[in-house]
Amino acid sequence: MQAIPSITAQPSVAQVSWPVRLPPSGRPALAAGGLACLAALKILIQFAGITRYGFFRDELYYMACGQHLAWGYVDQPPLIAAIAWLERHLFGDSIVSIRLLAVLAGAAVVFLTGVVARELGGGRFAQLFAAGAILLAPAYLAFDSFLSMNAFEPLFWLLCAWIAVRMVKGGSPKLWPAFGAISGLGLENKHTTALLVFAIVAGLLLTRERSILAWKWLSIGGLVALALFMPNLVWEARHGWPQIEVVRNAQNLKNQPIGIWRFLGEQILLLNPFALPVWGAGLLWCFLAREGRRFRFLGWSFLIVLGVFILGNGKTYYPLPDYPVLFAAGAVAWESGTSVLSIRARRAVVPLVVISGLLIVPWAVPVMPVEAFLGYENFFPTFFRIRTERDATAELHQLYADMFGWDELARTVDRVYGALPPEDRGDCAIFAGNYGEAGAIDYYGPGLGLPRAISGHNSYFDWGPRSYSGRCMIIVGERSAQYKEYFASASLVATVPNPHGMPIEQNIPIYVCRKSLEPLPKLWPHFRMII
Image (cartoon, rainbow, N blue to C red; front, side):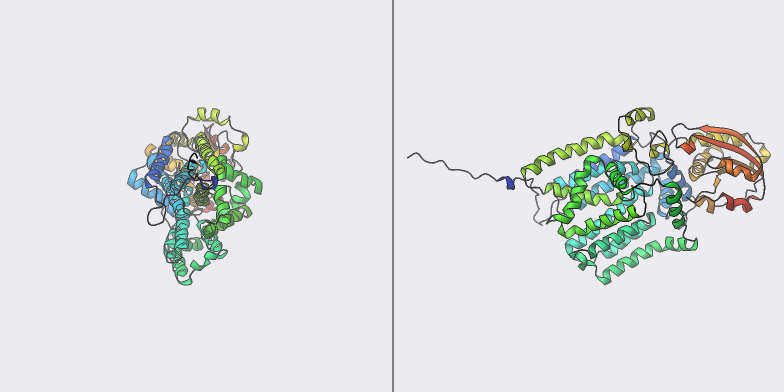
């Protein structure tokens, strides 16, 4: 009889997968080289547009706060002002110097997202996919483009989540002091870090991992966080809790009100619509996957954060610091698929995320000249426009619109100031309607020979009218038509055009006012604007 050939067993469909290679320790190897390359790519993308436009309005304010170092400010904790002060003293006053640490913080988030994916059980693919998806998420590219609390907040949140994951995996609560230290520093950056702490603890209470909430170590962690946050907490109490007033006024007068569906829809837009299968899979993985069961607290904490911001009428970008964890979990979910279909889907979703992310880069990083970007912007549907504030109706979206006109404003004020009689200049204050206008004069003015500005907006109000009497004052910008009524005479001497700016900054009036109706220190409370 003819011999029957042997049959070599073939792997079944269920066995086809991208294997996660484990080192002898049983943990996935860290793709350190690949993650470092992605972090470096992040830096290159950010630097491609770092000097294209000018300073963002808030950057000018943070630099002014850095000249008045304190344990708190009307509208923010002290860390961002300290960072601005540090950058100016270490690196200089250039726009690159002021934005350097924000860019590096963004690169650290890219790298750490891959590290968290590894902690969740992800191999090389999951680590690189998670880091790459975060790298190209437009919201993170945007917020890492300039000095802002929002550039550092995701780093603090991700470090806290990483520590919590390490505690859950090890079954030990001994890292709570480290968690407390990071969250305490995060509170000095932005008070919303308190919500993350609450959400993680609540998420642990809702799962079987509540065992790591050991009273001793949790208490030590809480005391560490409180000790780091205490200086700002004391400052807030001594100044009448101004942060509460700022939030209330912003909700009533400034923030764009939206419904729950628009809020959720803008989450998708801010993170790249084609990345929804990544972070969406991460949320499902935490709740439904056997491997994700230990990390279900991450899913609960995300839902708590999202729910609080929706119910509290927060801006749609407020939950963004919590998404890197979902991207990490989602990348693990995509890697762990074992069917042929999931492999084909994986091979499709990766290029979709990459290509769409690259196409959206100009929306987040100013890599194009402004006229070219306006043409590019018109190719996208109008629903891609996200408005977080009611007056954000400029041709450019708000992030870019607030980067134009500040240097020209300072030069025009300098011409007005220089035209004054010499006897008037010594007692002539330059009063700006908002902190962006005041910050522009404070940044560009010294090089022009201008004195520093005064203003009634937010923390500028606390810095007072200095020694000015009110005999002569140059009033610039927002609400200037209202403020000039406190003087016996007022003349409109200039208007600064700014076609690319926000509506309130497109034609900035400048008045020369004389003889205040009362001494300026007595009038000062009338100039207060907290929002």
